Image (tube, rainbow, N blue to C red; front, side, top):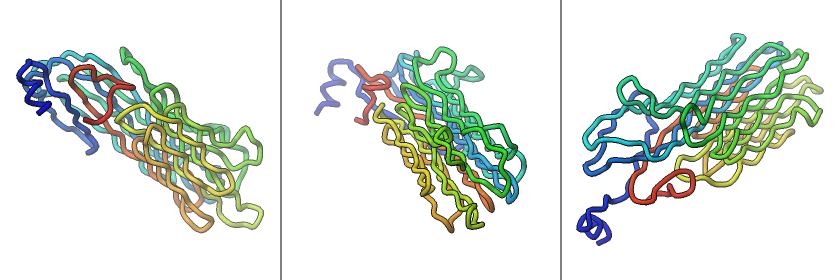
Length: 292
């Protein structure tokens, strides 16, 4: 009935389209649609692993949103969804891919992919860029804490995905100093925690970074718990990073855009990114974008 009334008055019915398949996707603008709003989240970076070095998690993907993007009914836009970075035993994990909405070669909106984890002492993975260019808002993905001059395969938590109002949380490193604990996200995912078993010659593992939702701005992701290797909490209804235990491998990042954790024998993968397009009267990010 509501749809019929809208058509009778010439008002376009509200709607949305979610893109979560990595790679290139084509989207044809529906009939009667001349303006859209959208959000993009880049893929999270993969962690790095090694038995004899510090191993940080990957950074979270950045989030960007934009309203009132002018479109033409029937035109085709390209939505490229960034893949999550895979773990690596090299000095750097694989970065997450950028997620973008394009008209031909012109980028209308983009959320950057998170950097891969680092195996070298004194460096950290960088979160993906959000709020890029003329975007109306968003936040960078969370990076990871600086790794320490420690040998023996120390693991680090993944960074959280960027939020609608600020950056994602930082992933932890294996150290008793509170400065290296994971942090919460700002409307986005949180950093993952770690568990330190070096005193008993066991491996160190860490939790994945939290992801961020695509529907509407919401609460902050809660930081992962140090000492239990819990994953970072998802922000704005995103998925939590993977929890791990003493005998488990380091955790994967949560959807969308959470960074994978670093560890001894294996590291976690970053979560893939995502995009969402909405349209209809009064529909806009970050607070008037719920599903209809």
